[in-house]
Length: 250
Length: 311
Ligand SMILES: Nc1ncnc2c1ncn2[C@@H]1O[C@H](COP(=O)(O)OP(=O)(O)O)[C@@H](O)[C@H]1O
Ligand SMILES: [Mg+2]
Image (tube, rainbow over all chains, first blue to last red; front, side, top):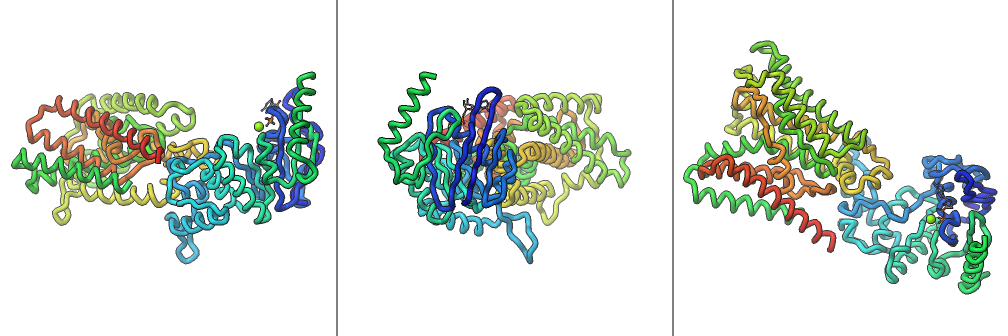
């Protein structure tokens, strides 16, 4: 088991954003997480990446417990997250975006010079983009790419860290139909390479296309955890709607 | 970027052709050297402007920093001793660097608008230069210093050599090092750069310090050429330098800059000012012209930015 979350709690003052959440995930699988606004999806992701500190419970990655609230340790352990607003520099090209902050430099006799290894970075960027089966001119400015292509650049950037777990928060929210298909293909490519993916989305259709398992959250609790083959779009829609009415009554 | 630089080169050539036709003196060797020498001062400032503006900032204080570092430099030096040249150079450069670093610390550390901080510094540095010098130029600099401004090596004026050499180093710095890449990334998307682990504060301090250092270098060249440190030197130079950088393809909203472009831009400004003087255009009108060119360049740059993002 790659990721094992047990009895995770997170309070914001009196708000119970996460209430006894337990969850596990294997390498090369895609986990879809759905739930209404405020269900605690983002909070759960932030606890995994270490940008929030859980109030209780444990997160174990590959049998070693992950220190709480430590983004550096989470990244070291192989956890990467792609945020909704991708964080690309739109006027810089694809290579520059992929390597931003980690630029390779030319080495002379084993010693690093201050000069950038432009050729080497371009080649590696092409390889990374190729691994995602995306066709993008890496010399193009990120701002000149389509939404799906930008998503590919953000993923390629994450791949440079050689992650074992990639978390994507609403990657398809702002995209058109064709662009969504591209991103779903990217996720399939990641899965093939043995990378575990957590896909947070409120688009059930997308999740049913790529996910192996689906988890439904509500009011900080995990109320459903099923293999995609064990459930159906209509059943899940029913559950979410049902959860919604219950929520309204509260 | 390449295409654009070709375009401004064409504009430069057209401008030269125009002045060559309207003036007999324009194309003489002496005048050409004149233009290049004058351009080296503005050009150094324009290179600094390309870095700072490319990183999403603005430095309005460079003209005043020129005067301030010149006066500080000559004030500390003992009267015309031979050891005074390195001392003047050191104090002058250190003053520019330090004042620039103060700009950067306030902008990066206190998150103040660059526009306001450097506008304040514009006033402070000019005021201090006038106070230290009692408002009077200091005439008669050490011989070694004068050589820097007036000397030639192989027929090429030393200021021009300093300008070209600095341009070469700056070009490498901007395009081929992490410093340059990160500076542009900060100007493009500061939050993303911060997330990528780039230390924004350190970069801002360094960038404005670099701008101040280049202002000090510029004034060393100009004061040694006229053999006097003048507390009113560099007045409005920031405007010409910013214009040159913008003409050269640096985006006023950050994220894009070109050292070669800034150098060509400076040459355009130099040719324009020289040509207008030869045509007996009064200085007041020249000032109007510089302003118009600045606004036109920004307008053009903006249209280009919109066009580029559509593609
Ligand atoms: N920084 C915060 N401070 C206080 N409350 C928060 C904070 N972040 C999230 N919450 C609360 O925690 C709950 C879960 O939020 P979130 O994880 O963002 O839900 P989701 O991503 O599923 O929409 C919500 O009630 C939200 O208001
Ligand atoms: Mg959310």
